[in-house]
Length: 472
Picture 1 (spheres, rainbow, N blue to C red):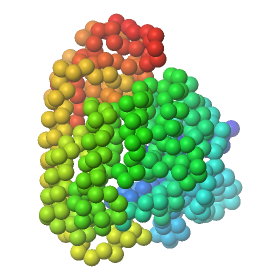
Picture 2 (picture 1 turned 120 degrees about the vertical axis):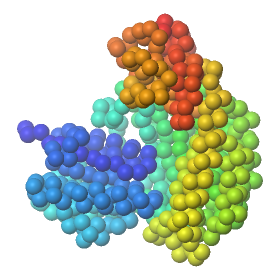
Picture 3 (picture 1 turned 90 degrees about the vertical axis):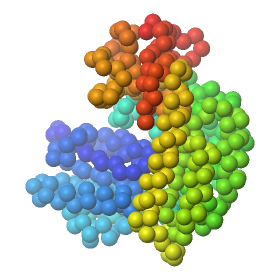
């Protein structure tokens, strides 16, 4: 049988990465192998994000570049999925005539049938129908997922919060949680195949299970914490208005829960937060931060910010800068506000000029860069446990280790990147340290990472009691 090839391009968030992995697994029984070469592909799929205007522009630019490839290879199937597909529907076909398939955020399970239909009938298919439940499939070996160490696992989809700037409720639907037993079973399968860290995904994980009467999110964490062979648990995103005392207590009680939380605040101004429909105040947010740090003193806290929201004044922005100074986030993601279809804020008056938005974004990043560097420098001399993800990228001119010895990279519990190399040959794990835990003595702080040397005897292949360790 002739080999068939799939090329998939993912734009956007971690949930899109997870969805792309599901697409790859779903098309594997049809005989499709993944290729990095669009020219080799029989099917090219673009999985998109519509949260920000720039991501949407990037999606249409990519589709436009595929026109010449389609001319050379008329049998090529080109499809677009995800949030942009859900939002635009058949308008995409009119805008980009060489697209064969438009599939929405709830249509991934139906994708194999769509691909078969297009290949057989040479027709176009548009499927943006939404469903109110999540159809669970029996987990199989995750042989098609990228990288063995860390995986994403979606525990819920959609959102009921309707923040004024956000399109998620319109393109991903209302909030729906997966069955906890199905989530646990999927993670067990991943762990059996070599996964050592999972990141649980949801627009608001704190409200997991409430509508369906399932277990609470902290109770789900307890179930996952009991999975043998799993080293670490992360999650995103956590809405500040719903973070519970039970979840905060989990940072004390669950040894596999990483000491890191991503808690998007978006603005430090109560006036702007109210216009955003975030439903918490600056003071309430700060109270949650204090509670987290009392429960877990070394917890790393990261956040999201939107600058230039309609009506944001310089005083409002100064409130944001002040909040950053008070919290001292470990790192942040920040974006200029952009109007999105269907989002209420697109109709708000008092839009902020692009030049002002750009200036505020620059100033915010400059402030946070100083704080991040200071916090990284505080870790010099500390011993940090690193879950090894692979070989580090090519050494740069300012690398603190000028030798030719191989360097490895991984992340701490607080989600900091650590690069390290051994002073002598490392222990042999089939010539691969990926998936092991290594205690690293931090020698140098860099703007976006740390560098160090492994502690002798600290490399271990399991985090369970009685774990073996090997001389480094």
